Image (cartoon, rainbow, N blue to C red; front, side, top):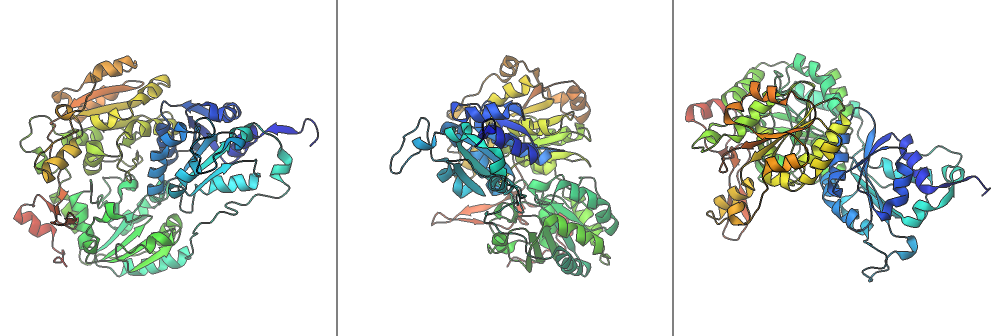
Length: 604
């Protein structure tokens, strides 16, 4: 190599990432990634967060909300890598893009099993991440641009997921001949990467689906998270012209605005809307595009999911289609976006039975604000507050929905999303501590847009250190901390299944919480308690109309009911038996039940 032609490998990696469209890096600094930091600091907007799990969550939701550019997470070796495992696992389950660049000890200090430690802060990250990553690898020597780009791009799809690339410390600092690593030829995406690729022709799939939907009396389109937001929004006018009832899964709640005449709700076993679950059970043809149809979506009693329907699923992974539940009339390994666009070009449907009117009638008669959630409350209703909060948002707001607890289930049930609003959540892991970092990622992805977050106190506590990130960057995040005195969902589970033998769910059983107002003020964030009289849309909207970050503590009834519920029973052998998602409690009034179950088949 001629003198002067050498470059540090960390600098070369940074340039390659820039060429692939990466613009932001959420990171926690450490000695194990020091050369990466030095190479990346001038090439990306580097955003230090306080805990590594937040780097992964923020990068995930930046990419979910992005209007340009991509984000990745950077961590150091050892605890830096183990701290980000939860966010990697969530993206794996949710099939979401996430790139993690991690430091590692020098290649000469790597472990030789069964040794437990050789280098400082060493852990075998590749072994930890391999079961929950599209690709996980450790670079013990510099690799070519072709190979590096292939690894990175495998995070993008056709079925996205996390990619974790560890870079040994001596490899980061190694002087390399960039021209030799790049070679003369063009790199090829995914070269040498084993993955399932879409196999079915989108136009042919669309013709088959158009025929099934066109001949249906009670069709339902179900949009999932692998159908991109832009594609769904582009198709909305056509869906409304055709009049085709359209529902959305948990990870796709912003694909159809709540006010659309074709919006059929958000069916799910957890946080789903009862009206939507009833419609799924009464449809005669369901086409699920980009929806994973896991048990969280279908319920554990998947044999009774969509019992009257021929169910078609479009998904880019053959393994998902072959998992055995729910029962499919046909599955197609194809791009959800391509099939959706082709379908809307060819689909025509008439409505001889006035199914569209029936869908709207069911949605009207079975409100998202369940009456059972308003009975015998000793404080404000979480669900009513969340509905008022949704009505106080602006059309260009971004809604960050936490991953578990009252902010998650309540948000999914009652939030009314406007056309053009972004909403992002991560449901698969149902993990506490997700909301604040989700808001951070969304705020950087959508500069100039306000981010609205409602999260329970138990969940908020698990990642509250990122208040420092919000304050440092003056992010316009409006935080509503729902104070229900602990882990309300855990408390409800212990009340339901163990006769109120409470442990570890509130302050009386061992938890501790700060003075929330003092905590926000300690971080320099304006905060106040939200009075019950202010829990109406007009007042909330006025309070949020201030620049920069702000927080409100919303005290609600700690024993807030959470209905509707899919009832389950513990059997004598310790196993669980569940009702189908269409049979939820409490029971509807008989006259309404009769009207909204017109086409519901008997169980079995």
